[in-house]
Length: 72
Image (cartoon, rainbow, N blue to C red):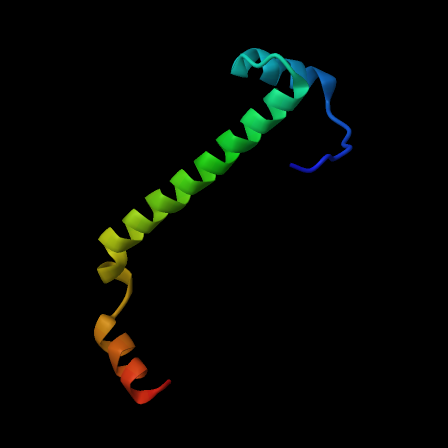
């Protein structure tokens, strides 16, 4: 784990601490970072599922296969 010196909005930190139920600044920041990472991963997974479900509406797979065969 690295040590980083940053300026933090004290009111926002206190609010986040209250919302997350954390006791220390370190716990609050680490919990907020893990939540942000999880949300990002969830968003990517949701977008991938959407693309898999809807790709046929936007992509012409025959054209893509032909381009791949021809080396384009």
